[in-house]
Length: 227
Image 1 (tube, rainbow, N blue to C red):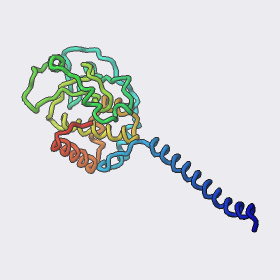
Image 2 (cartoon, one colour):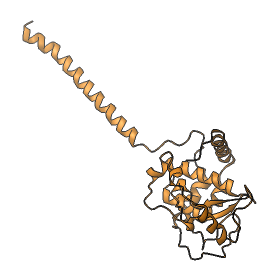
Image 3 (cartoon, rainbow, N blue to C red):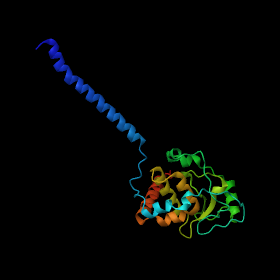
Image 4 (cartoon, rainbow, N blue to C red):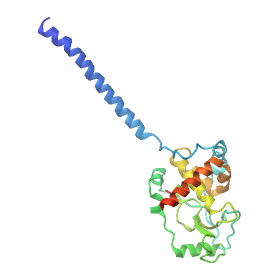
């Protein structure tokens, strides 16, 4: 065998191996790009959304944006829901799902002064402060769903009768998980919680509620805040 023939015989497999390596590298790069574009992974503790909740999020309430504040006094909430004329809900329009799902977003966005809390209580005919644990100044559309600190998004929510503000916290955390997991759209979650958060609470299964309570208890033990 001549020198040229030998080089051809050895070189062909080497070229094939090089081509295979390049192809494998390109495939690996494509896979990494695909993985980086995937939606965020939902919490392992959270069950997938139930059929009742999916149906609820497809209902008309989930497509109605919050309205305008038309009343600043003599506000009257009912059944742990605020007066819609006083507290229709409001959002930070520039906050995207990516922003909201970033760790620490809600803590950084929170800005409700004592003076504003007094205004909120006064609008609902309540003295400020109330007995510890009886009420909290709540964001109707929570910060963890892009809600704003405007007075049109705030109301004094009681702990009792149930469901009260602690149960609404579970709904907020659930919708945050679902939105950040890509299961529901941000505007649908905002609109639904603004119009009827109790309907979302009632749609959650016992397993979902148990997982949410365990999650809240873990945050409380660690001293951490929800997202």
